[in-house]
Length: 461
Ligand SMILES: [Fe+2]
Ligand SMILES: [Fe+2]
Image 1 (cartoon, rainbow, N blue to C red):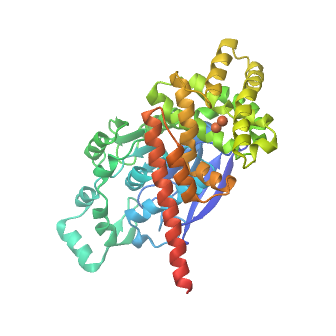
Image 2 (image 1 turned 120 degrees about the horizontal axis):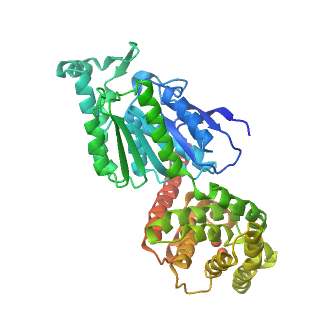
Image 3 (image 1 turned 180 degrees about the vertical axis):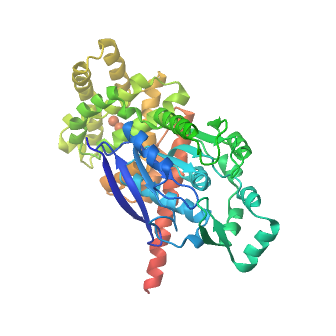
């Protein structure tokens, strides 16, 4: 397929434009995606962003490189930029792509884009991976390298300073940029980051000392720090730049690619899709993607076998394809139970047909069927059975599934939330924690929507 390179305009909460370039070489809607965040006074067209776009697209990973507030083509005056505004931009961008169905989203942040990415990752549940290139962690230290105490005092007195970028251009920058630093204790926030993280930093960086990244790495749970000997802040030397791009691309390729995109699982997914589309109770394609994602998050921590669990997750609800409509969409409890029983009884035949077509061994097919058949009306004894049941329930808490279920079940978010909280039970600690943290966010979302409606109602009267 030819490369898609499309300009996208996203609006922030105040209606201001955030302009970026979406790029992919595949028309698949649920590709993994990396959002590329540039450095201070740079833009979406930085050398790093362009090169990463090229390398990641080759790996079937979509990219979105965008201009921060006051940079490039995005709205806002440069002099009014703050870290808080950059973090807000990242949230808007991630929410935009998440709402469009991208579930595997990673963040890449360079220098200033790095500090904004650290903060965004510390409390955005949709960020699955974080990569930082010479990130700023402590802006006070970075500023003190460039400016004397007297300069900073004058900045405060005048309300602005003239910022000199690396190309020698001067730009007005308001004191609000400096005073906004205090709102962000980056090292403290880094403790909340629980996604795989890579930091690349040159040990000859004179703009942001490498000591900041060494300290930062100590606060992040799952962090790989690559110090590139001899490299400066911009990885100016060609060898350093190539090396940095290689390290970053390899790490992203290893950590972001959802198993659903692996060739061997993609074939199962493609064969399962027509059956999943026949399920009427809800959006089974979305549900199945969520279950696969939950399995990916739970299995590694609970000792599950992904080679069996991913096919089982993709195929666990194919049985609904054979359940008559009156047993899928019904208010009768008895018929609902009969429908559930049917989707379990009908599944093995379909699973066998699909997996035989892909030359799966009979013993492996039996193991997958065993996991699928245990996901209802059964007390599981094996860890893989427990993980699939837990993933099935955990996926209900993901934003896209939760919102879709509100529509499918013709209910309201608070009611569905209460129902899920009382009805969901878990066998594994990982699933329970994931479910509860997601449900907390879902609750905050509908409370926020309630407040927005309430406020606009007050304005109209
Ligand atoms: Fe099911
Ligand atoms: Fe299910």
